[in-house]
Figure (cartoon, rainbow, N blue to C red):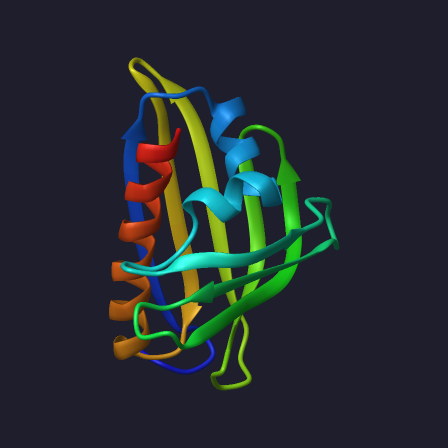
Length: 143
């Protein structure tokens, strides 16, 4: 399914850390620069204003030396339980997607769930799945 409704992606992982620690790691530029990024790449710049209506910008350098910038605005900030924000990739088509991140305390740590919505096509969904899994793996190692 493509078009206005788009495709969806959901991935989750149990991380042995508190929701407070993981929420801070997800919303603090200092922490984001240490774990965010695609496989083989790194976060070169992180600007985050985690309030409803606040913006963010994450600039990553890829393994091949190219750069990708992800930006958007927060639509929900419920510390330390949930974040929701728009998602725009540059370079890329002019379309906005939506990401919802949930931090649920449970035995053994926190279940971190990422839901990526309004994905335009199957290729993008596949790329997002690989990227989110790598990012969550890096977050787990960092936390």
